[in-house]
Image (spheres, rainbow over the protein chains, first blue to last red):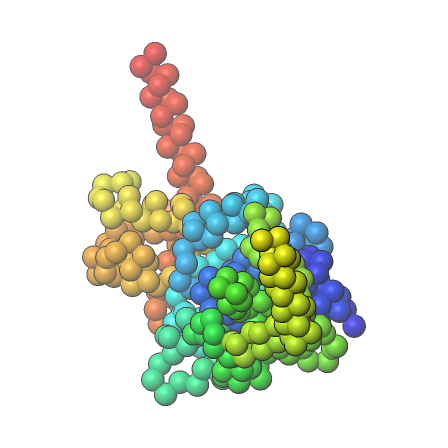
Length: 264
Length: 88
């Protein structure tokens, strides 16, 4: 099976080599979890490491903000545009929801740069502009299929309302069945510190890493750091150390107390 | 070319965001105005090929006409060069 690497080595390992080609991927997470950074890095790596041009379709954030934010990670999007390998398209969601809106808006850009990857930022904005009585799942299905039939792998961003301390279920994303793969980014509070966790919640037709991984947004972009193997209940929002770790802690504390007592 | 403040705002908006493709109302919102207020200026800029326009679902969408805009920039540059030559 052909795989599409993200270029983030640890994530590709979690995905057993990358996303399956032309699979619709959803990156879900609350504000500030790094959805845009991960998505942009997937596009930039696609161009610079694997020769796959890409389009970033944004509804809310103006391109100049995205150019600036990308520059902070060392990604020169304007240069990639000049090279004809990248396009940042900004539009109103209601235009995309028009019959043949996707084609009218994107056909010429697709012909021009022949992209293999596309980020849609975000499905929430499409939902906001859906006419009363409109079916978001049908519209999202139509748009994702338009992208796929052009030979492009879509990656859609979904902003969840979830905050630290709350559990997340895959069914919270009403459109989860439309996509083939879901990456969830989540804040977790552990010992009074806010940490970030990533988990692959679903990957149709492929094995994948089931373990929760800690990640950080570094000056170079998205970096997966390790697992939360010492903790249980991270996903449920009530993380606690596993029993063996608690025993080690208790033993260490008792030992320190004992040493302290002896020294006095 | 920049006879009004709105034209200046539109030029800055599209130069900073060359990938912007939006309806008249959508473009207007992004510079803090309403569609009817920018309509005449948009038409002027379309007529000189700095902006392009086409229809989607009965609505006109506006975008930067990259080749027209480049040609306009070059002609302004040439004009300024000539002006400088004459004054020297």
